[in-house]
Length: 145
Image 1 (cartoon, rainbow, N blue to C red):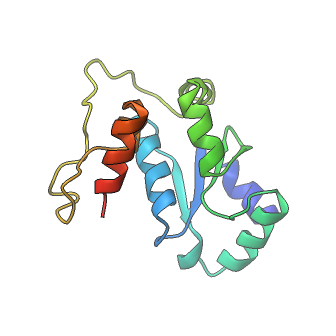
Image 2 (tube, rainbow, N blue to C red):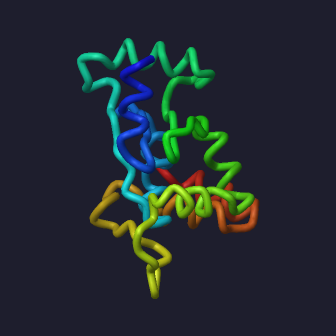
């Protein structure tokens, strides 16, 4: 538990993930698109990963990843982060914690290029999908392979 708290307090935004987790990838991408550069701790590549995973579960994160901390405070898992993003409070939380340092004058709406995801015809992002009407979002998510 101490290691998780220590790592979570070292940077304004911290995400505990696993390299093979698709929701972890989506949450990391969302943070990058919002202008944050979170510290990423891949539990499956850390020698203390299993201990940290148990500590995250003890904090109430089930499944254990992704586990998001903003300003040293446990925010939750992917469901919690997406809810915060949908209601508009995630970006403000990141700003308040000084996890977003630069204001983007002309943000690019689709930062992922086809070269990033050659195997998929869908090159949008989680933030892009979240902005679509529910029927279009369902179709866009279905296209991701």
